[in-house]
Image (tube, rainbow over all chains, first blue to last red; front, side):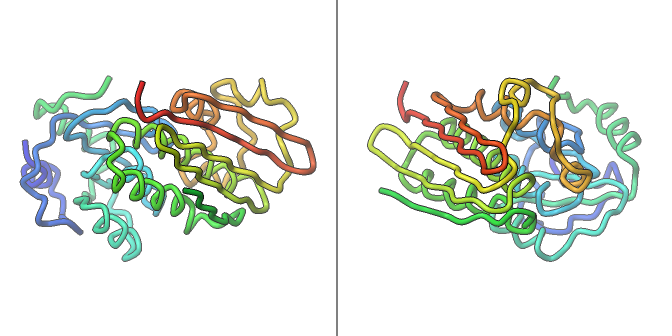
Length: 115
Length: 138
């Protein structure tokens, strides 16, 4: 499934990195704890689903080689976050849905978890 | 090649900017992606620790042909019990640090997991020095 298809499933909007909307997503990891994200092994085409919306969530993706991020609950994404995401060729999607609902929809759509 | 960077305690806006620069540098030098990731994850955890716990610190990056040696020396409260701090789940982080997605007591164990050699020295009331080495080939 592509990022664009995922965005459609969760009625999300692409806030930055529109040019990467056709990237395939093979797995999703959901966490608000960046320390946990930093323990992940290498997975190709991994998307982070998170309710943590600040510069450190983007930085953590940068260090973890994650280039797709889906932010829940319609939280405000700042220009600085989008700039950092752009520098790292990331696509940033935002949905109004909660973490639970978003994860349920995407798991139900067949996207496997990391663990 | 030696590089030195300064980090200010409490500056969450710039937390990770050194790790970001080092990542770019290692990639440019053609270091394999898995070693780059191990190195920058360890460095980022340690850099965030300075921002979260110390007053200020300096990060020295010594790039050699076969390895990178990184030393993070901070001025801060120090770690009273390093063995305790190395155990997963133990943390003294403030609510502010936890709001940033850290402070779960996973940082030091993760630095250990992502480094080939690790040495931590700390003096209460003075500060902490973390030194780690990652080899480019195994």
